[in-house]
Length: 173
Image (tube, rainbow, N blue to C red; front, side, top):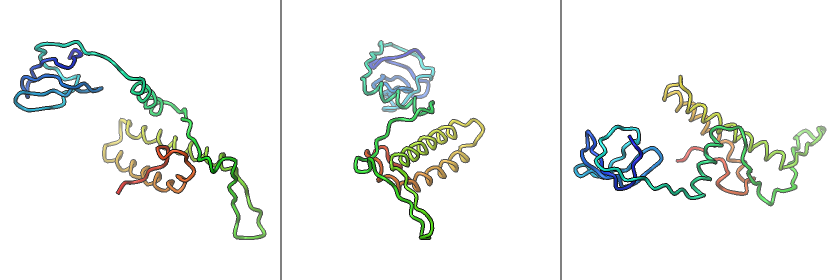
């Protein structure tokens, strides 16, 4: 189907005559005389009664969001994630119960960076599972549940993140 703008009139084989009322990335929202508003794939073949030229205006935020999504899905580049200010220059102390053993100190920012890398690699694994060509949907869901549980186990470390949006999120109840 050619690219259509809002106001284009079409004839759908199942829904009849309709008007494009909204554009999305992969679909049109079409208001049909008989069937109301229905989503129609841009790839679906319909008879175009009257085409209206689409108007393209993408905000900087929309373009930025799209670019971030693409980079997350297809690159191994990690985004900059901020650690909470109260933890900067802090030290994590690992003290064994056995007093004869030496305690170990790890800079919190080093530990935090390892947590962020772990999170980013889990995201990449998640996308590779979802895009896998051989796994069945049931197998993908099963593996996805393991990843969700891993995220849930890592919520302990959310206290280190500056922004809530960067935190781990487990299974929602």
